Image (cartoon, rainbow, N blue to C red; front, top):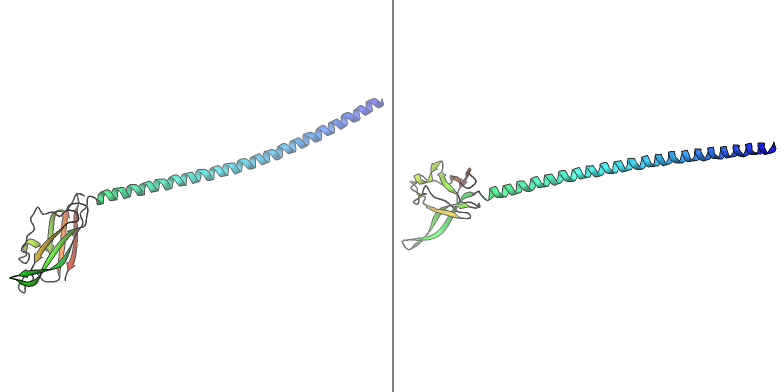
Length: 187
């Protein structure tokens, strides 16, 4: 009978040890699962940050592409534009072998395209209506890129042209638009 009691005690010990091992294994599994969830949460957060950064990078790249396309479109449009301005130039001249000064209305094209259908108004009247401008502007006049047109003019006490005077320019170019410029000129 002693053997049986001893075997019961051995079985009881084995059961207790097996139970403790089971409890420790269960605790270890719970801890490992907790660590795995924590690692998975961190990985998910990192993936979300990475996806968000990729979306921002894609958005920035799209914005940069739009800006570059806009710049290219503006450069293409600029290459089709003429840019006219006017000013007064005083030049040394000789009349009847006497030194004198001549005044010129200079119309400059600083644009990249030819200016056509040029209209010049002086004090709201067409330049060709003034006797003080002996050189008239033909209807088919044009000024090429970086070119200019010099028109001599005279000021007389009885003339229609008085200083200062307002010049208004309008023209067409390869952009397909009618452009304009105006200013008051004096010397």
